[in-house]
Length: 315
Image (cartoon, rainbow, N blue to C red; front, side, top):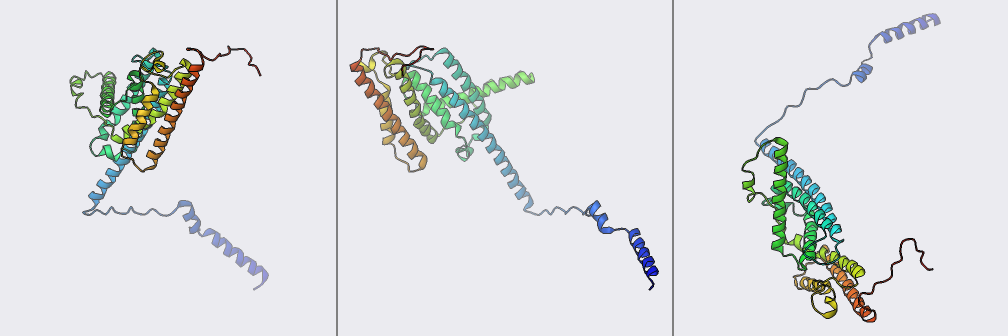
């Protein structure tokens, strides 16, 4: 074929090819053709597995709500403990600012407990007991508060009653708020307070909370001794020197003895908390020895000189 004819033939072929639609490019632009939805296959087991799905969804939602409430309870309980550490002596009446803050924090905890109490009934109490870690911190705060007022350890039954009372008060506060929001009078709601769901702390919650109480007692003993020059006791000034009254050293020694008499567990948390308790007792004992020895060398009521603000210390 002559060169001119060959070039003309190639041009005609390219033109014909350009006029033809490119199916690959069109498919790439428009995407794959729509396919019909696969039909749902149902048989005798479909309803059963749908029930399993709903049960697992409800379980995870319930667990998340309990974990969230437990974190808030832990934070509020720590704030109560921080407020109680501002107390300087054991007395039934707390300072006004501390008492108001503790009451307000306990009210917030009660509303949180009332919100999750219906989901912690029956078998769910043991099922979600490990994720309700805020109960341990709450019992630590309640036992510390009771000790600062009465210098005795809160019993398990009394702790359960106080937690139940928080649930009831929190539910009443929540119902009152809902009534104000909706405008409903809510007659008869207060008659069901005895039937309101409650959360009962178990033995492990109580023991772990009392374990942690020893650390707070050690901090309280150190602070009160540094500021008052004597060990905290229920006998007033000079009770630890005259032998009258009971000091915090004896209380912590008794607490250590009680835990030594209990059947010992071999899990990691029990071992760590036991060692922490013994360390706290030793620190308070050493503090008591120092006060007794130094008290015989210095006049009663002696306190170290504290430089006033602006005075430069000697090198």
